[in-house]
Image (cartoon, rainbow, N blue to C red):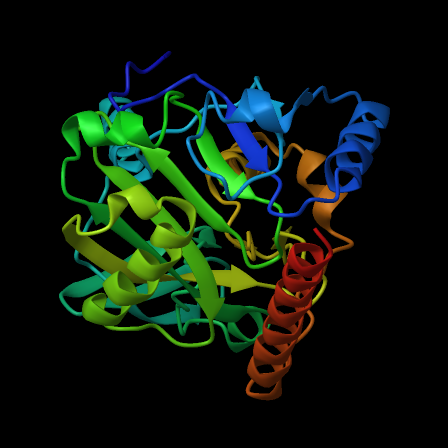
Length: 319
């Protein structure tokens, strides 16, 4: 709001929909969050069907103090706000090499020149910078998949009568939200490799029909994959070496709000020596043990996915 960023912000909350018949899934999380001072509202199954027109879910928790937006438009808006305050933004100028200068600071080499700077912040997420081996080794780049449907018009309201974003209670959950032009943006799955747009569309279309069979036959206009960064300790890595090098990574798919906070913390550290970032210092940049870390991550994902599927089948048989 301060910078008037047009990013399709929808202040309609988020629904955590229960994939399972076990109502304790919801009440346990609600009670845990309440102990932390966070209020999520319990939505009973019959009431939820007034929001989400699917037989797939068995109630939900509603987080009213949440919103969703277009993250690319948000990032561009932040860049424009920074430029408006005198920041020099250089796009398409990838840093190929970084060297420390004897008197302090760094020399950054790009394809078209070089720049001498006092401090450097590495914040490339799953797209490793290649500039500091220790920082790169501390994360696993993990892919997730997203697609958008064609504009659905009134068919969107056959599925949703809420503007809230939705994700479900499985470990390998779906996540989706309605867009202003009546498309449905749908994401899910993680893997140690990216996939082609065609594969993404095929996989996620199948996932979508498990929830909304009424969308059979809709066109999928776009599909893509992207890399997230994960640390072994599953916490963000924020830090500095005391010699001008800073890093912020390992947000593990929860980047929108936490990266904004991280940016504020590290900007305050660089600009005025604020030390609030040290709250994160204990979550270090220990090695993610690639390539074995990839195998462990994929094996754990597959195991938890199978566990959820087994629980789902067991509930269906007993009902």
